[in-house]
Amino acid sequence: MVKEFKNVKTEYLPDTEVTINDKKYLIHGVIDGEDILVETDLKYPKLKEVTKESPERIHDGCIYQNECGGCRFMHINYDYEKKLKQKFLTDLFKPFGLGEIPFTGMENPYNYRNKCQMTYKLSKSKKVVSGLYEEYTHNIVTISNCMLQSEKSNQIIEILNKILTKNKIQPYDEKTRTGIIRHIFIRYGFNSKQIMLVIVTNGEFFPGRNNVIKDLNKENLGITTIVQNYNSRDTSIVLGEKERVIYGPGYIYEYVSDYKFKISPKSFFQVNTKGMEILYSKAIKNSKIKNTDIVIDAYCGVGTISIFASKFAKKVYGVELNKNAIVDARLNAKINNISNIEFIADDATNFMTHLAKNKEKVDVVIMDPPRDGSTKQFINAIGYLKPRKVVYISCDARTLKRDLYIFSDNDYIINSIEGVDMFPKTQHTECIAVLEYDNEIEELEKLVKENKKNNTRKYNENKIKYIPKADVEMMREDKYEASGNKNQKKYRY
Ligand SMILES: C[S@@+](CC[C@H](N)C(=O)[O-])C[C@H]1O[C@@H](n2cnc3c(N)ncnc32)[C@H](O)[C@@H]1O
Image (cartoon, rainbow, N blue to C red):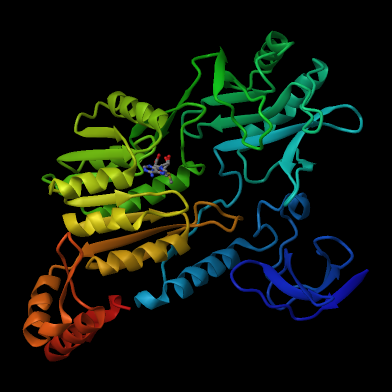
C-alpha cells in the first residue's frame, strides 16, 4: 500500500514526519517541499517515490543510499547541504547572539574517508562479499563502491573479496557464530600513501592466512601492513582485544601539515585528513597562543592538537583517557622532535579538577571531547583556573551548546562559533567555539555587591562568588549604554 504526502516539511535533517493510522513515522530521503509516495504496510514505512522533486535533488549519488542509510544528505546537492548545515548551526546558536554562523565546506564532498570498515557475508552465488548494516537492522547491504571511502580502499576491498572467495575463507555467520572473517578495517594515509589492513576474524584460527597475504602482495595494492584482530564475542563492536601483526610493522604513518603521526589499529584518528588539517589549523589560529603560555589539550587522543600547539606555546599538557592513545601521542611527539609536551593518561575531569585544587597556572585550554561533550565539573574547574582562552572543538553542536551555557555561568564570553564540514553527505558537522575569560566580571561583581548587597551570595564551600545573571546583565547594559557601545552585550543570552 502506498499513500501520497504533498509539499512535505523538513527541519535540518532531510526527514519528514507523516501520520499513518494515527501513528507518526519519520520518512528519510526527502527534501522540503517535495510530494512523495510512502510505502505504508512495512514495520518502518519508507519512501517509495518522489512525485514532485525539489530542484536541490541530485541523481548521481550513491546507489545504496536507500538501504544503507549512512549518508543522510546523499540525495541533496552539496551547496544546498552546506546551506542546511549552516542554517541548523545558526538557529541552534541564536541565543548567543552571534548572527550567521560561518561554515566551511570541503572542496570534494566524496572519497574523503581515510578509515573504512566492512562486514562480511556469503552471497547467494557463494561469493565472499562485504558491506554495511542496513539501518536499524543486522542485514548486510552488499556495497562494492562506497562514495565516501577513499578510492584506494574501494579497490582493495574489491580485490580482497575475490581473494577470500578463491581461498574459500568463510564469512562469519552471526546466527550460528561460525565462519572466519567478520570485518575488515582499512586506514589509508592520503599523504603518506601507507595502508593498514586489519582483518577481524572469529578467534585466532585463520586457515589460508598465508595464501591470502601472498595473493594480496601479488596485486601490488600498496598495503604496507596487515593485522589480524581476533573477535569471537557475540557483539556488534568491530575490534576484539587481541591482535597479531601478520605483515609489515603493524601500524602506518600519516603526515598532517608539517607533522608525522603513527596510527595503530585502535588509535583514534580523524576520518577526514584534509578536514582535520583545516579544523585544527583554525583551532590553533583562534587560540592565539603566546610563547609564555601553558596550554592544556584536553581529550587529546593521539596528541594531534598538542603537537600543532607546541610550536607556539611554552608548554603543552595533553590529557586523554585511552592509555593506548597516550602511548601513540608520546611517540608522535618524539618522532616530531617535540620536547615541550607532557601527555597524561587520565580522565579529563579528574585532571582539570586536580589542577584547580592546586591553583596551577593555565593560559589556554583546547578541548575536543567525544560526542557527549564535557562535564559540568570539568568546566567549573576551568572557571576556577580562569585560562585566558578556551577553544572548544565539538562533533555534536547540541552538547556544545549545553556546555557553552555552563561556560557562560563561569564568566566566559563566547567570542565566535564556526562550523567545519568534516563529514560531507552525513548529518554530522564539527564546530569550533572560541571563548574568552571575561575580565570585567570582577569589576561588575563589585558593583553588584555595592548596589545590591542582598542579591549576592556565596556559592558552595568552594567560595566561588556567584552573581545572579540577571543582575550582571543589568549592570552590563547600564555600563554599555553609558559608553554607547551596545554591541558588546551581544554574547549574553
Ligand atoms: C574527538 S576525540 C579527540 C581526538 C584528538 N583531538 C586527536 O586528534 O586525536 C575525543 C577523545 O576523547 C577521549 N576521551 C573520552 N572520554 C574521555 C575522558 N573522560 N577523559 C579524557 N579523554 C576522554 C577519547 O578516547 C578520544 O580520544
